[in-house]
Length: 387
Image (cartoon, rainbow, N blue to C red):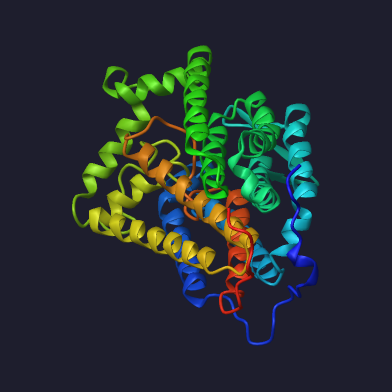
């Protein structure tokens, strides 16, 4: 059995007077949100007009703004909750996320051909977003629980893998490959931080690659995405249409772009221009310079987030903050890779920019957790056993 060390029992985890959240990180998050809302309106303007009979241009912006407000409230609330609350709540949150994922299979609603949403009291949301947070919180708790035992196969591989499978299996039943891939990558990153040996991680990566090959082979929809990625020009009117339109938008932007609001591809040429492919519109309107500026903004958020994680007071907080920041980093990298056709289409949105109320609210709430951890940055670090 792993040794359950409990240094927290004698610690007062309530924020002390004068302890403030990390202001640079807060400013960066608010900047991402503000720029994201502006670009969402620009990218969704034409689609909104078309969907509403040319009456309303802000249909998508209005819904996103409401979720942004809810997300900001969650961010403020979570920034006031000590990180140790999440260690105690890890298993309940994990169990709730599995129940929600399984409920999709029973009463889920289909959107754009995918059955991944549920509707409770008139509120439609995607349980997979909550599952990502639940997995990260549980992995942080297991990292603290296992300690140096994470180097062993029993704890570092089986322990984490069983926890991960509890969420990945329902996602596989939903055929939610993008979430499986994203959570798998974040999970492996956290296992590495926990101390799992590289040889076990390498074996796991090989097994994951075999799974993806088998999944793509038997799932025609996913197979079409691979074909479109490798040879979009072979079927420009169907499977290759979206990526070709994305590349047209990126190329049209040039160095300085066509100007904010002046994208041509957003006029119903580029599908999901306000969602997964919003970065293509950004490139078209703001050009290479503007796109690099937004990438730099994401990079600043990620680097500052890791800075906060490294200065957290205890191991659980460090791993929790690192996991949440890694989630944003991996999502961003995968989305940019898809839009530029460096990767096959995954259906992963661009954090803080793509349309999606659940994702935006959850992302802001997660950043609130990181802000809460940042309150500890000036406290004395707890001495714990090394991994």
